[in-house]
Every structure is written in structure tokens, then in C-alpha cells.
Length: 288
Image (cartoon, rainbow, N blue to C red; front, side, top):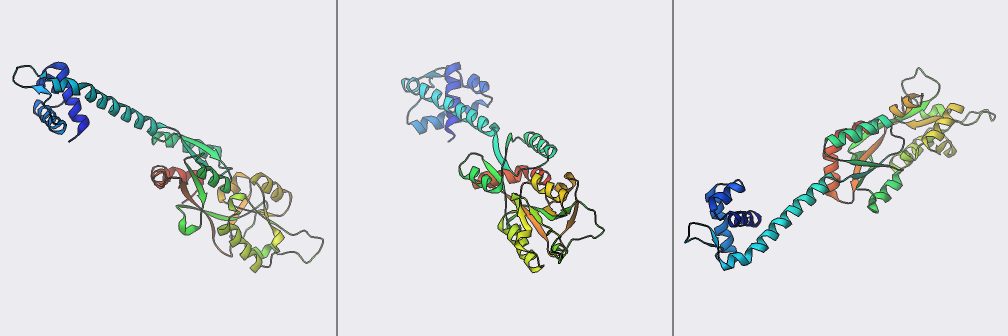
């Protein structure tokens, strides 16, 4: 038995003194209202209407039960209203720093069209994990190894000087034999200073003959400033390179990617956001 529907029929009939009029008031056929009231009577163990008269008159038992039935309907209305408020409540989402403003604006606008009111928090990877763990945000987009990634973005090296080569090999950044020539460095953003990217790049660099000191970590602005000032290179995505006026090429030694997945305190939240906002997040992250 649907208790709420049965109480609705009971209250509507009692207010109008008629099964026909009560049923019409809540938009159901009269036989359906009769069956629902009968089911309620069976559930409660008593008769709520005196059916020996033409009007649907309340019995003493019915008058006693009527206030409780109204409270059931009020509670159901409160529950529906609460669900509606929860469904439209802002969703805090932690995203990488330095995403283009235009991409973020499109993400927030398109998410709202999809029924999700996003409140974006920008933070580095470890801070994004903390925000989810502390429930300061509902979810976060975190860097993960490629096999675990929902989205991936290709990484390469960007330099100020254009080059005709289609790929860049790390051996081209080996320390010069001339002691007066500074070593060329590879700058990583904190976004890529994670084991599955930073450690992989370090192994490739050692194999190519680079010194450990040639790998540095800095903010995007700081790294680009060094690349422009020197002959250094920046590990980044094609969009990041274009936005900074740099020339981007993939790494010839091995393919490196920035992998992303949504993490949330609730697995259901993570799945829901991934399903609802997947294409929108992919476009914002420049990912496939």
C-alpha cells in the first residue's frame, strides 16, 4: 500500500464528504479513491467512513485518525521540498589551477543548463584531495595514472624558439660540455609533480643523460617566465603552450599524459558528476 496516496484519498474525501468529489479533487477516479481508503482501513485496523449514508461521514475512529493522516501529507510535502532544494543546491568542485577563464565560464554555464549549480574551487592536487577529505567541496578532479583516468591530456615540451622538428627528445637538453653554458632545465607545474608524471619524466631524463637538477617545479607563471628568459622548456599541454605564446612538441622518448578522474566522498556523487558533466569537464580540461 502507498501510505501517502491512501492518506491523500482519506483527507480529500473527508473534506468534501464524497468519494466522487474527493477523488476528483486529487485527480484520480472514484473507484481508485475507494480502494485506497479501504486499504488504509485495513492497514489501520478500523473503519474511517460510515458508508451507510449518502455522504462519506467520518466515524469516531476516522475523526481520530484524520489529524495523523494530515501530518503524513505534510511530512511528504516537506520531504519533496527538501529533495528539490537538495537537487538545486550548489555543488562545490575543486579543479586545477590556471584553467582558462573562458573554459571555466563555459563549464559553469553549461553545468547549470544540465541542472548542476557549480561552485568552483581552484587548488593544487594535494590541496584538492584535502578539500574532498574534509568535505569542504563535494568533489574534485584529481590527477591519476592513465589506466585509472576518465580523461587524459597529452603532455609535451614547450619552448620559446620555434623548431622544425616534430618531436623533442630529452637528449637535446643534455648539459653542454662548455662549462660556461648553463644547463637547460625542464619546468613542471605542481599539477604534474605527481609520481605517474614527475617520476616517469625523471627516469626518462636520467636515461637521456640529464642531471637531476635540470628538473624543476614552479607555478605556471614562474615557469613561463624562466622559459622566456632562458632556453628552458616547460612540460605542459598544447593549450597551455598556446596560451603562453610558446611552441609545443610531444616528447619523442615516451608518451606522457595528464590523467584525470572525479573523486568524491560519496561514490554515488563521483559517478553522478562524471556522468552528468563528463563531456563538459573534458572540454574544460582540454582532455579526451
